[in-house]
Length: 399
Figure 1 (tube, rainbow, N blue to C red):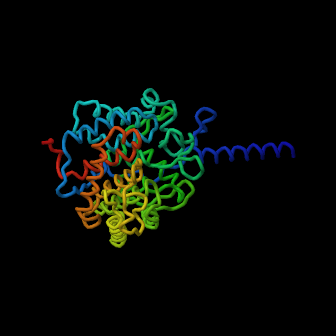
Figure 2: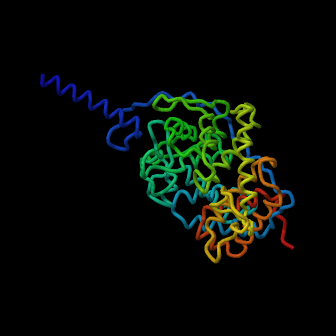
Figure 3: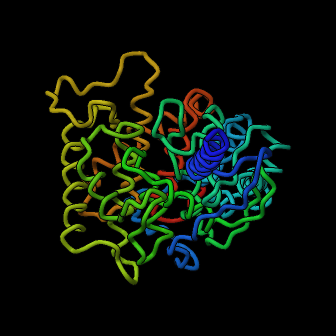
């Protein structure tokens, strides 16, 4: 009886260990049983994501030297930060530096930043010993914030990972294919396909959906359904429904990332095999148009928006803050202009509304761009990126 009990405990313990492996990923050094789940069916994907389809603002052209100075400031500000999130923001903005500042330090920093995000060895040497890119039982997963818990690859518990799939969504916008090589903390040579695979396997209804939606728009192609590690079925339509059902201010950055994701979703109708139905695309278009109506009604007199952009305000309430650091104004306005740049003209506010918002950002940045980068780096990178993307042509020299 005793031996049978010991044997039973041994089997139970082994089963418990296998469950831990399935939930948290491979152990680093305690034991490697070589147990791998079957590969998901979603290995086939577009060879390379399609480039962003930009819709410039008629009549707006960013002045050349001003734009270049902003890129140089952004590179210096991002490089001084240690958090992974800042390097992701740098990648989104400084890919423009490859075109605008060839041979300058800002272009070189973009290349360094990209290599750090793809290879933990370089990240460790240049930024931090914290593991940025970890092998998991399903593939590989990124830490999107340096202060997140090492195993926090989902947002299902306090202290876990937020902004899941933000790196993958940025890689999609940069046009990196799923065959792009990566090197993990554990020394494995994998590819971005393994990051996508891990994301799909770990997807759950409690995750922040904005960046997963963006990444999947670029990388899933027509294969818009999958089963996660628990056997639960999900689809792009599930993610879209979550975005459409959110309240205007729900989600990161005053709801700005939700609207950007919806604008990117609408653009997916140009794919060879669109992931959504005509009815679903109509719902996206309506959501963006509703947001534009709200934004038109709540634009402040200085051209900005803030946390009140979704409210019904009297005209005398739409005033800029009096002598305070306008963090809300910078955050809301930069994020709104960024989704305007990829939205159809009938889904965004009228040109005069957008021009007033552009003037607000330019005024703020011309006044003290360095302070903006140091005080609120993330929204400031969104602001500069929006100005470049809304510009009708390459920035012209100042007269």
